[in-house]
Image (cartoon, rainbow, N blue to C red; front, side, top):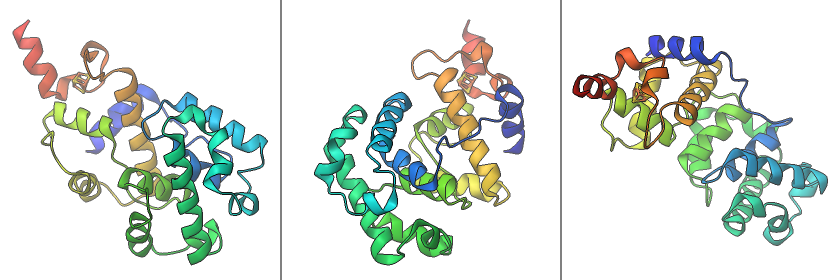
Length: 218
Ligand code: SF4
């Protein structure tokens, strides 16, 4: 597992994730980024900043309707505004601040966040890893696609099983999980494309079942 990490790191270098000035900005970005390109999230984050809605005191008083107009670029914006409100309410009612929330034990906080309305496991793990610096591995569609093409996992593996697959094989270190997920995103976004993967340019091509099978056919 670390050999794959090293090949990806040699290819892409450090990716400096997650872009965001504050932990609150990272949390809101993690909620907004689902099902939309990052450039749209950047527009929404910039809008929220201009309205001082990435200030905790202002955001905790905002309703979903107050937030909606500024996050329209992120699609499903009405639903996402409700998710932001439900997340902020959870933090406020249970901890009073993000800092206090992130001082909570990961084994307590992750299950609690997974029960918050509107937050799925990818969003929760992104918040915990990238805003809270907790060692929890983030799984996304790229992770499943790449590791199933490599031949390491079944394509229909569950989120939790794939998360365990990484966590059982790697040292439990947040900086490593941070960089590894960012590198997987780089490969999925630029090289291991859904329809036409660019296997010739891929740093993992010698290890990859998909590539080895297809190159034999040619
Ligand atoms: S060799 Fe091709 S299919 Fe395999 S991981 Fe790389 S880009 Fe994806």
